Image 1 (spheres, rainbow, N blue to C red):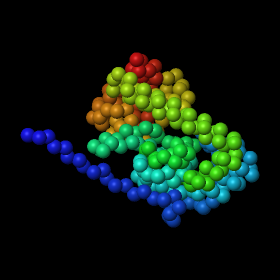
Image 2 (tube, helix red, strand yellow):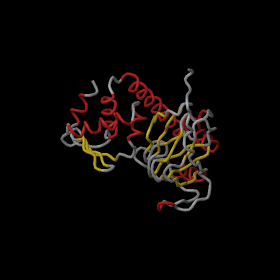
Image 3 (cartoon, helix red, strand yellow):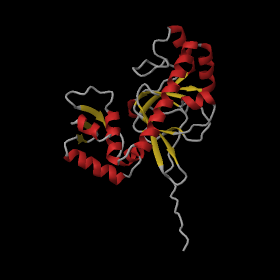
Image 4 (tube, one colour):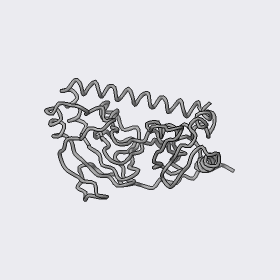
Length: 258
């Protein structure tokens, strides 16, 4: 008997243009032209001269996205860049058989959509709001003109694209060469708290992904992630309280990476 594959279509999520008129959900203010405020990771626009920032204000729009809304979709012609100011966005790639791989979690200060905006090639990932998001949007043509006019911004764009390349390389290496599922999950949890101060091996972070989404990040099943979390908690490697993660024993997690 011939095997048959049943393809179940993914739930269609609403994609909204950043210029679409919206109410102010979750208390996020929506304004028209504005100057994006600098954030610690905002390499592109940090410390620009006031006159340059005024030019940026003329081409920038602010938009609020609700949880589950799509900023842009994989395969879509590039519209522009998004600078995340509040909330978080997951960037994922999807296969025809419905499998998903989360490549990056964008947090405040991150810029998403930059490679396609510069190259003109279609977006290679789907950007979805994981929680209420406030983002600054700049259309492709005005942004490219802005980069051409300001060499310092062009250099920062090149540095950011280099960072994206190296991060993607690390992810491919991490998925392809990590031996065990527990090692992959340990790496994910350590990366999640990498920017936090580790006090006697302790660090805290917010878990905004479900177990299924974490499985999409580390390349395993939801059941395996759930089992490993229970094992890590039993061994006192981590504590999880709702959406709050506490790394209890960083050294023991690091040993799992070998």
